[in-house]
Image 1 (cartoon, rainbow, N blue to C red):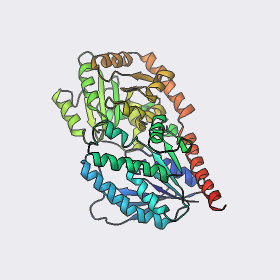
Image 2: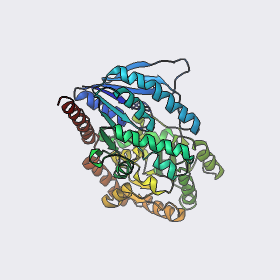
Image 3: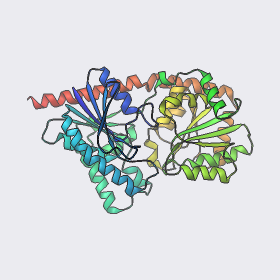
Image 4: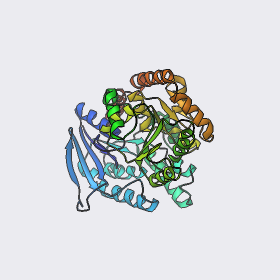
Length: 411
């Protein structure tokens, strides 16, 4: 069948960021489907104005130039979301898919999917990657009563129009059901571990360290992801400041982009840690991440302390599993439960930095424990979060949703 897959921020492994849609799309092609990705070109040179079409591993990728980056303000982001929603609606409709898949964020992605389905018996599978707008409301970023009402309306609209909903965690499923989704029509498919991609020789990590002038015998604490207000990456700079007073062989590598990138870098400079104990680096393509994680002693995933953040399904967590890297997070929820139950890392105190520093230092100085965590992480990636296994579940949902719609249409 022909599948129109709407994702405003689609990435291939040659780009930084999540490649979930790419990995699922190429497997849909392998299953025999014709897949059309409708996405944006975020870093256009200013000359491009109209749609372009490329074929990537059998996937037809339709890109519209719409500038976007994580440093944009709220109004700029809304403008980017709205522009893409309006222009992608017509593109999606002209492609006349047998199935529409719309993946957030942003939540506005449901609008072009709905427009493409109007007057046609084309089902929509809506994928929820973030509990939005629950998270920005809980964190106080979305305060305007009118905007909150509109966001909740759009959320309910998405769930009413979707034939099936995919959530990335049980917490996201609960939030979706609380705001209009039918629990029987929601499937949880978390982020996945690309096991083969991250199965690299240790020499890759040694070379990466050498290229960045990091001693081979140092401990490397890695953060790789968004530097957004909800992530609270500054927590790791403060942690590095405490640890550096008692351990001079620990290097924090903070890699990514976002609204707080400069702020984090400035704080590391202010504390006298920049370039030595803390390296603040730009993001790298997904294809380079295996070498980065091979160089890491511990990988981290941090968020600001708020219960709404505990349902997150961070890609960095699953990349760490795939690479067999011990994990340290600073929040509760289902990932904290996985860490405790499977012995793959530690859960740091999000408020008591002194205690967190003691926890992390003790782990970095315990090679035997690190090895046990590493093996357990790799085992968990294979047993529960293999990309191939989760992609099969995703494809099964897509095919069964289309099949059910055909059955209803021909009655």
